[in-house]
Image 1: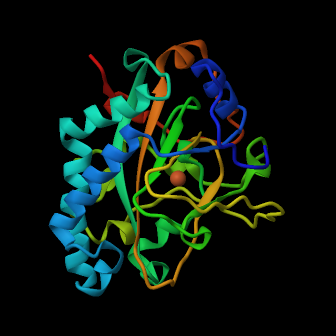
Image 2: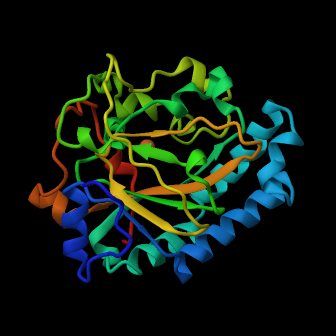
Image 3: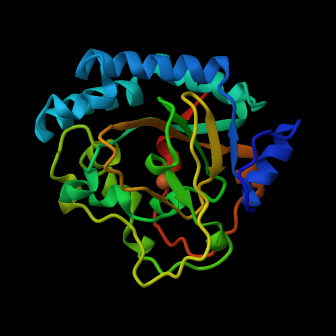
Length: 278
Ligand SMILES: [Fe+2]
């Protein structure tokens, strides 16, 4: 895999197969992704004001975190947003009874956010699977604005099939959710980012190939949760907002058909808390 693909295969099995093989898809906005991103934008505006891209200028770090926490909680927990995710998933040819998903999280990458020690883990290079997700994981990412390449993230595809030295074994899903879902979603405890241990790279990794992208609001970016990737640091004066959620095709899970596992040693399984159609 080198370039990001812009058209999905005609059949859903072919799409899943390509994703497990390392292909990345960035496709046009559709009615379902627009509905979802509009809903997220409206909740955000309600909590942080109309001009979202400069909202960080209006609040202290603490107050901004608190306000975003409310948005995060609402989007993750409320069933109307779960329904929107089902509709989006179906618009890509998945049958809702065949999948389970981890609901949408709002990601907020502030101007100069990497200077904040509380946010350090946000910028770690990682595979999503290191957070106790199965190898069938498909990550679905939807930006809320048109974004320049400098404010999105990068993939390091050369590591899709090769080992990255990492400490994913420190991640145990049951520890993560023991005291509620605060660490998982991050809506209350501002200190979590300093105290909690997040899986990351443990030794120097020489990177020869980097695949970045710019995008339009409400596009759909789909990739395997086993992709090694990293959020870019940005000091562009704007805050970047995106939504992401994770899906697992239950038939593929049962069949053991998914991305290769080259180095994920995380423990437990996030799957038990995924949302299902039933
Ligand atoms: Fe990620």
